[in-house]
Image (cartoon, rainbow, N blue to C red; front, side):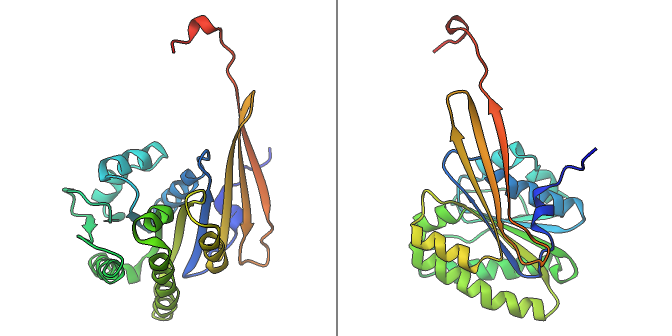
Length: 241
């Protein structure tokens, strides 16, 4: 029997300080791949850091859990922390807020919260995966200049952390239908790994294309995976509209 590969296996080796861009469109469920990758890291005994810019904390947890990861339980177990940029109250000690910020203050406050988490969880001693949810909501809130400045800072700071013995990688999740083409192209260029997903609704089925386009390993080869969900035929009388 042929062994079923995970998306992570198609990426091959992940380099310390690596950046994965997970780009999906408005009809795609490709963002769930990011959740799966985070869950796999936790199952290996590694630590996960999630940044939520997208939705209120309650809905954030519900969406992540629907994709297979129990955020609350893993946070209580010390396997996960969350930076909650979306405004609102939370009551968990593994959730950190950046407070009221604008384009001029966000990066400095965000970096300071990250430092607190690194110190509290002693992350120099653990491998870390960080998922940013999502780049498009960050863009809508602070515009392209802040997005670029944040990840330019990440590139420089990331190299220093790797030199000092830290092991981590980032998953940047983006709905590409929301951000300008130029910003998306820039994110592709700074990323070491790229996964591009596309959801297509046809007359008789829903098709999800998953293209693993970019990697650093010499053994890496691009691949396009496809999942199909067939239509369920039913009579009009059985559907209440």
